[in-house]
Image 1 (tube, helix red, strand yellow):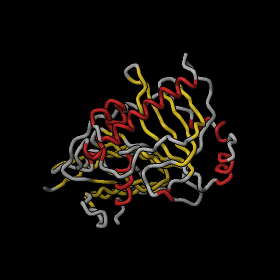
Image 2 (cartoon, rainbow, N blue to C red):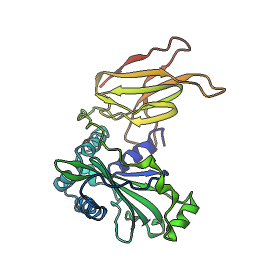
Image 3 (cartoon, one colour):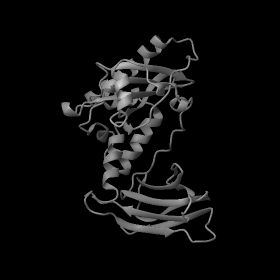
Image 4 (cartoon, rainbow, N blue to C red):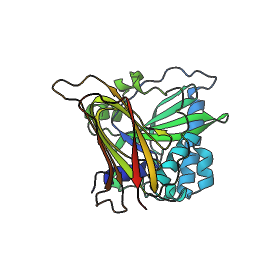
Length: 302
Protein backbone atom coordinates (compact mmCIF):
# COMPACT_ATOMS: atom_id res chain seq x y z
CA UNK A 1 0.00 0.00 0.00
CA UNK A 2 1.37 3.46 -0.92
CA UNK A 3 2.09 6.31 1.47
CA UNK A 4 -1.49 7.54 1.30
CA UNK A 5 -3.39 4.26 1.20
CA UNK A 6 -3.73 3.91 4.95
CA UNK A 7 -4.44 7.60 5.30
CA UNK A 8 -7.27 7.50 2.73
CA UNK A 9 -8.93 4.71 4.68
CA UNK A 10 -8.60 6.87 7.79
CA UNK A 11 -10.14 9.85 5.97
CA UNK A 12 -13.19 7.85 4.97
CA UNK A 13 -13.60 6.69 8.53
CA UNK A 14 -13.63 10.34 9.53
CA UNK A 15 -16.74 10.72 7.44
CA UNK A 16 -18.46 8.86 10.22
CA UNK A 17 -16.65 10.95 12.82
CA UNK A 18 -15.11 8.05 14.63
CA UNK A 19 -11.90 9.69 15.69
CA UNK A 20 -9.54 7.43 17.56
CA UNK A 21 -7.19 8.72 20.25
CA UNK A 22 -5.35 7.91 23.42
CA UNK A 23 -5.94 11.10 25.38
CA UNK A 24 -7.72 11.31 28.71
CA UNK A 25 -9.74 14.22 29.91
CA UNK A 26 -11.08 16.32 32.72
CA UNK A 27 -13.63 16.67 35.46
CA UNK A 28 -16.63 18.90 34.69
CA UNK A 29 -16.83 22.38 36.13
CA UNK A 30 -20.27 23.80 36.96
CA UNK A 31 -22.47 24.53 33.97
CA UNK A 32 -22.65 28.18 33.06
CA UNK A 33 -26.36 28.39 32.20
CA UNK A 34 -29.70 27.65 33.74
CA UNK A 35 -29.60 24.00 32.63
CA UNK A 36 -28.80 21.28 35.16
CA UNK A 37 -26.46 18.40 34.41
CA UNK A 38 -29.40 16.00 34.13
CA UNK A 39 -31.32 18.29 31.75
CA UNK A 40 -28.27 18.90 29.59
CA UNK A 41 -27.49 15.19 29.52
CA UNK A 42 -31.02 14.34 28.38
CA UNK A 43 -31.00 17.08 25.72
CA UNK A 44 -27.61 16.19 24.27
CA UNK A 45 -28.30 12.47 24.25
CA UNK A 46 -31.51 13.05 22.26
CA UNK A 47 -29.55 15.17 19.78
CA UNK A 48 -26.99 12.40 19.32
CA UNK A 49 -29.64 9.71 18.93
CA UNK A 50 -31.38 11.76 16.22
CA UNK A 51 -28.09 11.94 14.34
CA UNK A 52 -27.48 8.22 14.87
CA UNK A 53 -30.96 7.31 13.65
CA UNK A 54 -30.41 9.41 10.51
CA UNK A 55 -27.16 7.55 9.87
CA UNK A 56 -28.75 4.14 10.40
CA UNK A 57 -31.68 5.01 8.08
CA UNK A 58 -29.32 6.62 5.54
CA UNK A 59 -31.51 9.71 5.63
CA UNK A 60 -29.45 12.54 4.15
CA UNK A 61 -31.96 15.27 5.01
CA UNK A 62 -32.25 14.22 8.66
CA UNK A 63 -28.46 13.83 8.85
CA UNK A 64 -27.92 17.39 7.63
CA UNK A 65 -30.50 18.72 10.10
CA UNK A 66 -28.86 17.03 13.09
CA UNK A 67 -25.17 17.88 12.58
CA UNK A 68 -23.25 21.16 12.78
CA UNK A 69 -22.62 23.20 9.63
CA UNK A 70 -18.91 23.03 10.37
CA UNK A 71 -18.88 19.21 10.37
CA UNK A 72 -21.19 18.99 7.36
CA UNK A 73 -18.77 21.11 5.35
CA UNK A 74 -15.67 19.25 6.53
CA UNK A 75 -17.26 15.92 5.58
CA UNK A 76 -18.53 17.20 2.23
CA UNK A 77 -15.08 18.54 1.36
CA UNK A 78 -13.43 15.24 2.26
CA UNK A 79 -15.93 13.30 0.16
CA UNK A 80 -15.64 15.39 -3.00
CA UNK A 81 -11.85 15.60 -2.65
CA UNK A 82 -11.89 11.79 -2.80
CA UNK A 83 -13.99 12.13 -5.96
CA UNK A 84 -16.86 10.33 -4.25
CA UNK A 85 -20.52 11.24 -4.45
CA UNK A 86 -21.93 13.42 -1.70
CA UNK A 87 -23.95 12.75 0.40
CA UNK A 88 -24.10 9.08 -0.69
CA UNK A 89 -20.58 8.37 0.60
CA UNK A 90 -21.57 9.51 4.09
CA UNK A 91 -23.60 6.31 4.45
CA UNK A 92 -21.29 3.91 2.60
CA UNK A 93 -19.26 2.57 5.53
CA UNK A 94 -20.05 -0.68 7.33
CA UNK A 95 -19.00 0.99 10.59
CA UNK A 96 -22.05 1.96 12.63
CA UNK A 97 -22.35 4.97 14.94
CA UNK A 98 -21.74 3.82 18.53
CA UNK A 99 -24.78 2.71 20.48
CA UNK A 100 -25.26 4.15 23.98
CA UNK A 101 -27.11 1.18 25.44
CA UNK A 102 -25.22 -0.24 28.42
CA UNK A 103 -22.73 2.65 28.64
CA UNK A 104 -22.14 4.51 31.92
CA UNK A 105 -22.19 8.30 31.83
CA UNK A 106 -19.01 9.74 33.38
CA UNK A 107 -19.31 13.41 32.55
CA UNK A 108 -21.55 16.11 31.12
CA UNK A 109 -20.20 19.61 30.61
CA UNK A 110 -20.93 22.75 28.63
CA UNK A 111 -18.64 25.74 28.10
CA UNK A 112 -20.30 28.54 26.17
CA UNK A 113 -21.80 27.10 22.98
CA UNK A 114 -19.80 23.84 23.18
CA UNK A 115 -20.52 20.73 25.21
CA UNK A 116 -19.69 17.06 25.55
CA UNK A 117 -20.85 13.80 27.08
CA UNK A 118 -18.37 11.15 28.21
CA UNK A 119 -19.31 7.48 28.56
CA UNK A 120 -17.54 4.29 29.61
CA UNK A 121 -18.35 0.77 28.51
CA UNK A 122 -18.33 -1.60 25.57
CA UNK A 123 -18.36 0.61 22.47
CA UNK A 124 -20.34 -1.23 19.81
CA UNK A 125 -19.91 0.00 16.23
CA UNK A 126 -21.32 -3.06 14.55
CA UNK A 127 -18.00 -4.91 14.57
CA UNK A 128 -17.40 -8.54 15.53
CA UNK A 129 -18.35 -9.15 19.16
CA UNK A 130 -14.79 -10.00 20.20
CA UNK A 131 -13.75 -6.50 19.08
CA UNK A 132 -16.33 -4.77 21.30
CA UNK A 133 -14.18 -3.73 24.26
CA UNK A 134 -14.40 -1.40 27.23
CA UNK A 135 -13.35 2.07 26.12
CA UNK A 136 -14.33 5.71 26.56
CA UNK A 137 -16.65 7.56 24.20
CA UNK A 138 -16.81 11.35 24.04
CA UNK A 139 -19.66 12.96 22.11
CA UNK A 140 -19.16 16.60 21.11
CA UNK A 141 -21.88 19.19 20.48
CA UNK A 142 -22.25 22.83 19.45
CA UNK A 143 -25.12 25.24 20.03
CA UNK A 144 -26.29 26.47 16.64
CA UNK A 145 -29.52 28.18 15.48
CA UNK A 146 -30.76 28.38 19.09
CA UNK A 147 -30.37 24.66 19.68
CA UNK A 148 -27.76 21.98 20.19
CA UNK A 149 -26.35 20.11 17.17
CA UNK A 150 -24.20 17.00 17.18
CA UNK A 151 -20.66 17.55 15.89
CA UNK A 152 -18.43 14.50 16.28
CA UNK A 153 -17.28 11.76 18.58
CA UNK A 154 -14.01 10.44 19.85
CA UNK A 155 -13.22 6.95 21.07
CA UNK A 156 -10.42 6.71 23.64
CA UNK A 157 -8.90 3.27 23.77
CA UNK A 158 -7.84 1.96 27.16
CA UNK A 159 -5.84 -1.19 26.42
CA UNK A 160 -2.57 0.67 27.04
CA UNK A 161 -3.70 2.06 30.42
CA UNK A 162 -4.80 -1.04 32.36
CA UNK A 163 -4.79 0.77 35.71
CA UNK A 164 -7.34 3.28 34.41
CA UNK A 165 -9.42 0.50 32.91
CA UNK A 166 -9.38 -1.34 36.24
CA UNK A 167 -10.59 1.73 38.14
CA UNK A 168 -13.39 2.34 35.67
CA UNK A 169 -14.54 -1.28 35.86
CA UNK A 170 -14.60 -1.01 39.65
CA UNK A 171 -16.84 2.05 39.41
CA UNK A 172 -14.15 4.41 40.72
CA UNK A 173 -13.61 7.94 39.53
CA UNK A 174 -10.25 8.10 37.72
CA UNK A 175 -7.88 10.99 38.42
CA UNK A 176 -7.73 11.98 34.75
CA UNK A 177 -11.23 13.44 35.03
CA UNK A 178 -9.63 16.35 36.95
CA UNK A 179 -7.41 17.35 34.03
CA UNK A 180 -8.39 20.62 32.32
CA UNK A 181 -6.88 19.51 29.01
CA UNK A 182 -10.12 18.31 27.46
CA UNK A 183 -12.54 20.99 28.58
CA UNK A 184 -15.04 21.83 25.79
CA UNK A 185 -13.27 24.59 23.86
CA UNK A 186 -15.91 27.29 24.28
CA UNK A 187 -16.04 28.09 20.57
CA UNK A 188 -16.14 26.28 17.26
CA UNK A 189 -13.66 26.80 14.43
CA UNK A 190 -14.98 28.80 11.49
CA UNK A 191 -16.80 26.80 8.85
CA UNK A 192 -14.40 26.24 5.93
CA UNK A 193 -15.37 27.24 2.39
CA UNK A 194 -16.86 24.63 0.09
CA UNK A 195 -13.98 23.23 -1.93
CA UNK A 196 -14.04 22.63 -5.67
CA UNK A 197 -14.66 19.23 -7.20
CA UNK A 198 -11.18 18.22 -8.42
CA UNK A 199 -10.12 16.51 -11.62
CA UNK A 200 -7.65 14.43 -9.61
CA UNK A 201 -7.43 13.07 -6.08
CA UNK A 202 -4.20 14.33 -4.54
CA UNK A 203 -2.22 14.19 -1.36
CA UNK A 204 0.88 15.70 0.14
CA UNK A 205 3.76 14.53 2.29
CA UNK A 206 5.54 17.07 4.49
CA UNK A 207 8.61 16.23 6.56
CA UNK A 208 9.92 19.04 8.70
CA UNK A 209 12.51 19.51 11.43
CA UNK A 210 13.39 22.91 12.86
CA UNK A 211 10.46 24.61 11.15
CA UNK A 212 6.79 25.24 11.75
CA UNK A 213 5.07 24.90 8.38
CA UNK A 214 1.54 25.82 7.35
CA UNK A 215 0.21 24.57 4.02
CA UNK A 216 -2.44 26.62 2.21
CA UNK A 217 -4.30 25.54 -0.93
CA UNK A 218 -7.77 25.94 -2.42
CA UNK A 219 -8.74 28.40 0.32
CA UNK A 220 -7.88 25.90 3.07
CA UNK A 221 -5.19 26.52 5.71
CA UNK A 222 -4.00 23.26 7.24
CA UNK A 223 -2.92 22.90 10.87
CA UNK A 224 0.71 23.93 11.53
CA UNK A 225 3.24 21.08 11.42
CA UNK A 226 6.39 21.25 13.52
CA UNK A 227 9.18 18.66 13.74
CA UNK A 228 6.99 15.92 12.29
CA UNK A 229 5.98 13.87 9.28
CA UNK A 230 2.54 14.82 7.99
CA UNK A 231 0.64 13.37 5.05
CA UNK A 232 -2.91 14.19 4.08
CA UNK A 233 -5.34 14.21 1.21
CA UNK A 234 -5.47 17.68 -0.36
CA UNK A 235 -8.90 19.23 0.07
CA UNK A 236 -10.07 20.26 -3.38
CA UNK A 237 -7.40 18.08 -4.99
CA UNK A 238 -5.85 19.12 -8.30
CA UNK A 239 -7.41 20.32 -11.53
CA UNK A 240 -6.04 19.98 -15.03
CA UNK A 241 -3.80 22.90 -15.90
CA UNK A 242 -2.40 25.34 -13.34
CA UNK A 243 -2.54 24.81 -9.57
CA UNK A 244 -0.74 26.58 -6.73
CA UNK A 245 0.13 25.60 -3.19
CA UNK A 246 1.66 27.89 -0.56
CA UNK A 247 4.00 27.05 2.32
CA UNK A 248 4.35 29.44 5.27
CA UNK A 249 7.58 28.65 7.08
CA UNK A 250 8.81 29.77 10.49
CA UNK A 251 12.07 28.59 12.09
CA UNK A 252 11.78 26.93 15.50
CA UNK A 253 14.49 25.57 17.83
CA UNK A 254 16.03 22.38 16.50
CA UNK A 255 16.07 19.35 18.82
CA UNK A 256 19.53 18.61 20.18
CA UNK A 257 21.66 16.87 17.58
CA UNK A 258 19.25 17.70 14.76
CA UNK A 259 19.72 19.66 11.56
CA UNK A 260 16.97 21.84 10.10
CA UNK A 261 15.28 20.27 7.09
CA UNK A 262 12.02 20.62 5.20
CA UNK A 263 10.88 18.39 2.36
CA UNK A 264 7.52 18.67 0.63
CA UNK A 265 5.93 16.49 -2.05
CA UNK A 266 2.55 16.40 -3.79
CA UNK A 267 1.12 13.31 -5.46
CA UNK A 268 -1.80 12.48 -7.73
CA UNK A 269 -3.48 9.46 -6.15
CA UNK A 270 -4.83 6.63 -8.26
CA UNK A 271 -7.84 4.47 -7.53
CA UNK A 272 -5.72 1.52 -6.41
CA UNK A 273 -4.41 2.12 -2.86
CA UNK A 274 -1.77 -0.58 -3.37
CA UNK A 275 -0.07 1.45 -6.11
CA UNK A 276 2.08 4.51 -5.37
CA UNK A 277 0.84 7.93 -6.36
CA UNK A 278 2.36 9.96 -9.18
CA UNK A 279 4.64 12.70 -7.87
CA UNK A 280 3.84 16.10 -9.41
CA UNK A 281 5.80 18.38 -7.06
CA UNK A 282 8.94 18.08 -4.96
CA UNK A 283 10.45 20.96 -3.03
CA UNK A 284 13.21 21.07 -0.42
CA UNK A 285 14.13 24.08 1.68
CA UNK A 286 17.64 25.43 1.03
CA UNK A 287 20.23 25.20 3.77
CA UNK A 288 20.28 29.01 4.14
CA UNK A 289 17.87 31.87 3.47
CA UNK A 290 14.74 29.76 3.80
CA UNK A 291 11.78 31.90 2.65
CA UNK A 292 9.06 32.82 5.14
CA UNK A 293 6.52 32.04 2.43
CA UNK A 294 6.70 30.40 -0.96
CA UNK A 295 4.02 29.64 -3.55
CA UNK A 296 4.76 26.61 -5.68
CA UNK A 297 3.08 25.99 -9.04
CA UNK A 298 1.77 22.56 -10.01
CA UNK A 299 1.00 21.95 -13.66
CA UNK A 300 -1.21 18.96 -14.41
CA UNK A 301 -1.72 17.67 -17.92
CA UNK A 302 -5.17 16.25 -18.75
